[in-house]
Length: 333
Length: 219
Image 1 (tube, chains in turn red, orange):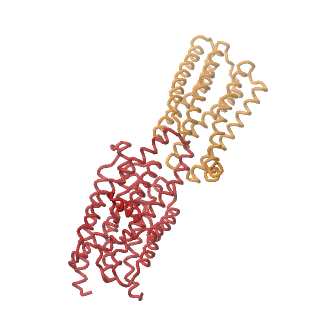
Image 2 (cartoon, chains in turn brown, red; image 1 turned 135 degrees about the vertical axis):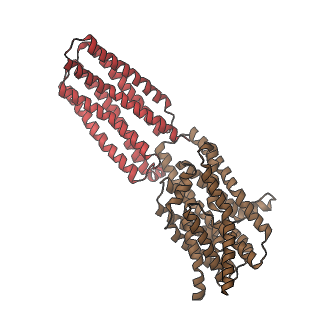
Image 3 (cartoon, helix red, strand yellow; image 1 turned 180 degrees about the horizontal axis):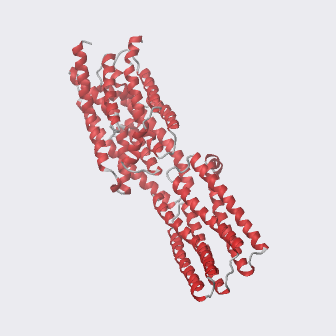
């Protein structure tokens, strides 16, 4: 890999850093927001488990993203990453939990539209329908889990102090599971713009992504944590645990290749291995819990704002990507 | 399994032990307080009275130390972050009760109010109602920490507090209407009655907060 080729990787690193800033929230945000663990502990664990997920369990999602990505040059990949980062910065400043997966997929579609590459409609359909379905699945998991846990605790009361101690351990474990699932599900989408470029191996790209995400975790925005855990629906530590567990379970369904093939081989309806916006799963699980606790506590205007951002993000990303490529073509780069 | 639980949750266990000792000290000091008042009504400030008074003072001092240790542990080790302020309010409220026991005994020892025989029976009744009120409160607090329903005990606290108020009012009526005492003595007796009545008021305030906390922490 030459020095010039390495420079174009800066787009991936910058995007990875901002992804890290945005992604620790769904993993450990509710635990940090309820002050169960510190940001530094969350950063270390998040980085380690994200890396493991990316290296061990991302083949299915890599294949899906590979079908959508036709970027051949590192320069185009760099521009796509910078475009997505600009959207990320803008929406971050608005305090909206951004979905990197949606932004990158939107950008890849923008590239395909600009160059007239095939859009692969069946794959796009799978991705978009998964984005719509996944929050509802997370809400269902959260609803059922909270119901079961509540019934269990009512029948077998655990002392307040010990309940807190158990929760601290469980929140850590489930946060690590979410980090693993995020690595398996979202790392491929980050390297998506560079996947088909001839200069870099997938392993190198995944490792660089993990490293840059680790750096991003250490520059976490506390405001984002507040939005998910308290502004939408005030969560207790038990509810924070349930929402994180529901998110981890949903990510597992949409990332694990072995489970996917097992279900498919038995002729059952299967979940496609597509990248999901992790924050949407967390929001879905919080809504699921609020259905059980009293939906009046849910702040609908905040939820509406978040949902609108999920619709707008891929569209804006696509348009910005097309604009960047137009400028690049115009300048003769 | 118990060994694993001990090592993994050693800090939680230590905190549990401290809170248990804290509540037990309040119970013990309540019994000593009742004993002291009984002794004072019989024979004034005797040596036995002074001995029990010193025990209550020592228990109060120990509880202050425990309260500070519990506060430090809750904040320093980030235990119960979501309900830390609730737990601290509870502990500080319960600490006021043992402080009141100590203050009342010191008041007795210093001012040595002459309590007429006509008041002694009602005074003893007020004392027992107040102690029952505090005991019910402490049981409610223990049930709260065990994550068990404590609404029955809270209802008992509120009922006993009303009884204490009614008994204290009767005592004041006897003091001001039936007994021909100088005003200064009447006011001294009234202050003493009020200081015992205040204990049940504190217990009622804590019980009110506890009922809200129980709802907050229920799933």
